[in-house]
Length: 307
Ligand SMILES: [Fe+2]
Image (cartoon, rainbow, N blue to C red; front, side):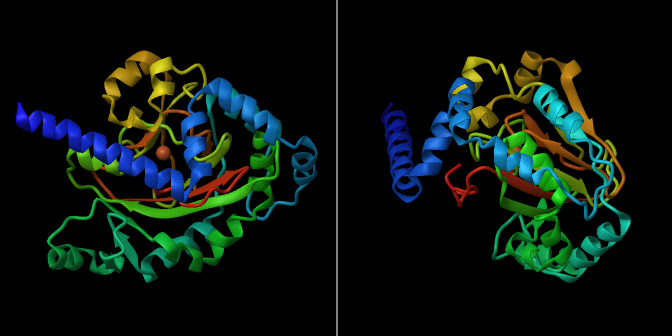
């Protein structure tokens, strides 16, 4: 009985402590995370931010990497389904990013203390006494010229501008390996390998590209078609904490027929409204290298903190 009371007390204390830190360090992000979970509120607030004129200006583009982009088709798929797939990176860019990945330091389980080169992964795991589930290049990604160019790629910016109805701001990018290792549920929860949705602005989007071939055994990204809108009220209310729910319950509610597994060769890309329920599947065969680029209307910084 005494331990149960202590547990409740410590959980309540932690909650208020975390909320206080969050509110004082980044009040704007705090507000977004509280309000944007509700569809009515985020649509209303987005209306205040949107600037149709600026988004139209940016839609007139010359491509660097992507040809034959049909902005209307992409935008209507994003609005209707919550995603669009079929943005393919040229093979010379895939090669450039793979070479970068092999010759730069990455960080086991996103921990800055667990750094290693891909060729030394086994030794790094042994010397740290830990298996790496993921390996992210974290801030080192900024050293990759091909990825830097993608942040200003006119085709991607035009897609983002049309969807956001405002001038897009690049707010984050990550280049990350997922390794085929067996994991506990708690590890999957911490590494976004369970169904969840993100709240980084009132409207934002993410571009994803595979740099290795991905089939059902190599960790496909999965989303639930249409779940970016008309969410169950409980799922709006608990926001990011939906990640704690059982995946099966989420799939049962939105329908197994709406599960979309993204399979494709190295270079295959897609774009997603991150309010759509999604997850990365843990690979069971080969490691997967994945690039994600995120654009929003506002940059609140620290979007990886305070989750
Ligand atoms: Fe996510």
